[in-house]
Length: 246
Image (cartoon, rainbow, N blue to C red):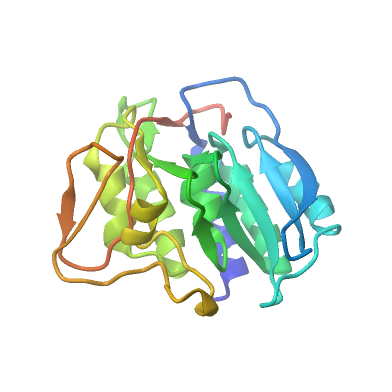
């Protein structure tokens, strides 16, 4: 099945469940999109703020002004606390059609739906030194418990795009839905959440036996027997009867 077909399926499931991944339960808001230029002259899109209704259409328009890198990809830099999972998957459909790589710039943070859906759906994925990813478990507000269906939805999309299933699922099971796990650049590489361009000399997915990766700086370190990818700090994901909220 093509990525676009998978993404449409994930989006439909997320919308029907009313899944939310965001920093606590906050009013819906929309991202802002702007364009800037990398040192090599490539124009890229900066997507900033909470993911809300209509962001897929705004991203599509913003990408029209973006250039392509040496690999033929457009670049989206992410700085967001998360938001609507359904809209995030709609944005991924746009990313798939355009061929997008994702990056978290120095000083930026990409958490929840931003990290677990948008960032992990990039063709190449980089967390720059000083950038952070934030990951956590889904939460079913109706049942007042962790949502394994939501976690599986996120993990399957990530696995389809090259992230180790064990890594993404480990972080969604590691703590409670209100505990965000933060990862810096080395940790994101270690756990296999990044995928660097071939010329960079590192794939960003280091497959070592019993590899010990960090989960947020001074936090305790965790060992995985297979491939790695990493996570750290708290956040809330909810499934609401009224549909997705940011």
